[in-house]
Amino acid sequence: MSVTSVTEKWVDEAAALTRPSRVVWCDGSKIEYDALVEEMLRDGTLLPLNPTTYPNCYLHRSHPQDVARTEQLTFICTCERDDAGLTNNWMAPAEAKARAGGFLRGAMQDRPMYVIPYLMGPAGSSMSRVGLMVTDSAYVVASMHIMTRVGPVALQHMRSEDDLVFGLHSLGDLSPDRRLILHFPEEKLIWSVGSGYGGNALLGKKCHSLRIGSWQARREGWLAEHMLIIGVEDPEGRVAYLAAAMPSASGKTNLAMVESRLPGWRVWTVGDDIAWMHVDASGQLRATNPERGFFGVAPNTSPKTNANAITMVRSNTIFTNVALTPSREPWWEGLTAEPPAGLMDWQGRPWQPGSGPAAHPNSRFTVLAQQCPSMAPNWEDPQGVPISGLIFGSRRSQVIPLVFEAFDWTHGVFLGSAMSTETTAAITGKVGVVRRDPMAMLPFCGYNMADYFAHWLAVGRRLARPPRIFRVNWFRRDGDGRFLWPGYSENVRILKWMVERIRGAARAEETPVGWIPAPGALDTSGLDVTPERLRQALHCDAQEWLAALDDLGEFYRQFGPRLPAPIAQALAETQRRFRA
Ligand code: OXD
Ligand code: MN
Image (cartoon, rainbow, N blue to C red; front, side, top):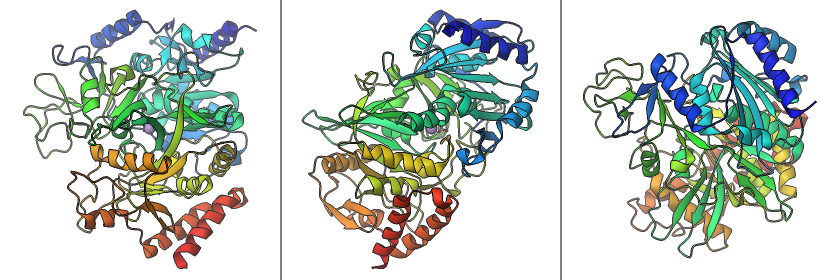
């Protein structure tokens, strides 16, 4: 069977189930994008923004009950429950298809079905992967144009007739009662029904690049991670590449585009959300960004927190669920110190100060990466960039120091596996609740988390020069609830220390959890943070840690004998060091 007949057969079956009014094959061209925008402006799916100050920018208002990822409705559907593991929702494949099939049957009646061949990763890269998704949402098609490489380029990268991931998406009736986001890794298949929200509906992103991607990565010996990728350039022009895992809406996009406060230092953006990393023939870890654009959180993005993002969203951008000013410009909390008068909120209602946020806390911008002023010139290098440091960061107001470095790869994997974080508006549910989120992959690991830790350890054994592993927490607060570290542009000081550690130049002190910057080792020139506050930010409290490690032991217990021994040993060793 040829490539075309495999894909055509699948598309025919999808159409037989969903019964669209017609089937439209997408080619990824600008003409196609412009026509989709025209159609959405006509039917009100998009609203035009100010064509002078925001040319080719549009506002989309989603259904008010469809504004974030819905993890409770997201399932890994493997034959064996253990292959999904207890950190994932699981459903047997037959039951999943029967339930979602009911929602999908006839779901596209009166709507066209768009067929989108897409490539994740740079053209010409052996790391890139192909997907084919169908959808009845023009907003999803336009967003896929921005976030992936759509069109013939995708099918050209198939290495065999079934070398692709299939994705069936329908808006359904947008009711959370009839919403399911289903992954069938054994069939390289995704079914998503009942949501038009990015993380649920742009199937190339979380569903393909992370959940199915991580499953494939384990089988094929690479890593699919929820990580940004940056190049940190020093005053001599040397660039060190780092990748950083952080939970959703915890500053990955800001760090990926950070403008340096330190003379001579500069940060280059390679990606802001996903890293696909493989070990090359010389034992070097290399990373590509599978995406082509950014689907970033708008609130709190400002000239101070992320000037590059502010520049890049001034044209050719789709905004979702932001507020609207009287001059038809987008607005969100944090963009300006004071909200402009006469705002419409994210649902199009007149907004008054004190009546809750004007923009939805998970409102977004969708924009091509090439519009970002800090994009690295080599961000689409088919070989990927060589990674010399990995960062695990989470949002914790207490306990976790600002920065520390793991003793070695195994200890770093332990630190990543031990991550917990305070939840954000990127998922539906309560905000600010501490939950375990190993390597920021809790919602995205497509298989048993214990096997995922084992896979990380196995990849480490193949590395000739394992990247240094760091743990960061920009969000630690003092007793009065004030942040101890200013974050944002100042984080480049932490990156500088990491790069100097990688090169063997920066001083550090040993603690039971790893290496912490020695007094004076962090470059604080021109920074308004007292040595005492910095000491507090870096402090590692034995009582707090011992309690946290007990809690971690509880979390690990669910994995039983599947938990890799080196991880259990690292926990026991950390407890021993604290008690010694
Ligand atoms: C995202 C997320 O949208 O992690 O990147 O939710
Ligand atoms: Mn993300």
